[in-house]
Length: 45
Image (cartoon, rainbow, N blue to C red; front, side, top):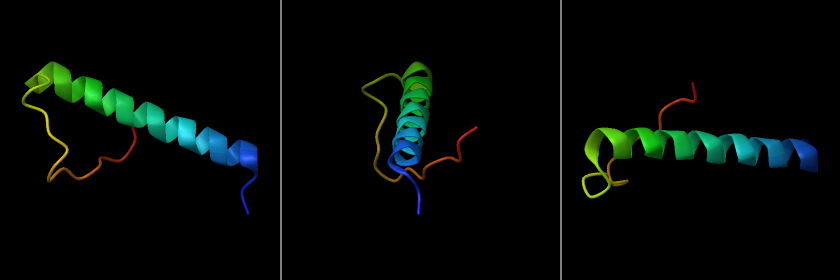
């Protein structure tokens, strides 16, 4: 079982990946043209 620190680190890594993906989409498409519907998550990288 993962420790609390590990879970917190995983949460922070996931949050960071989501923010980076959102920033990229906003830059490419603009805020108004970016949607979460029908999107599949990309693998972190």
